[in-house]
Image (cartoon, rainbow, N blue to C red; front, side, top):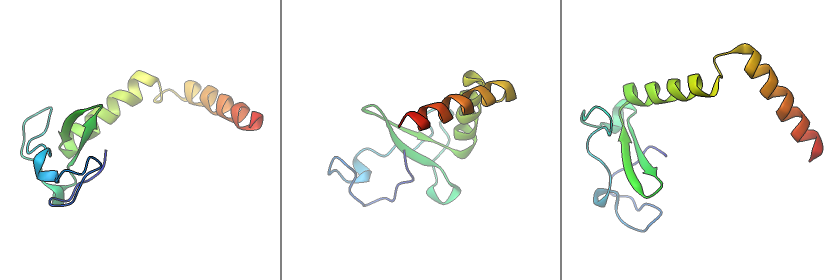
Length: 87
């Protein structure tokens, strides 16, 4: 997902006005590009997130993946190092 500018063409060749959500997909608040809100796709589904909901979704992913646990992070760093050495 990326921050969108109205009137530009997206990757499908359609103008952003054709698909850009006008409200947050979580809380229905009005989306404002100047406030840092974003819009994009989940697969083929157009979605938009206000900064509050985006930060909440990111925090949820961090918690679900265990990245808020230092031991899990250390293990993951070791795994990444091993994968990098293989390449």
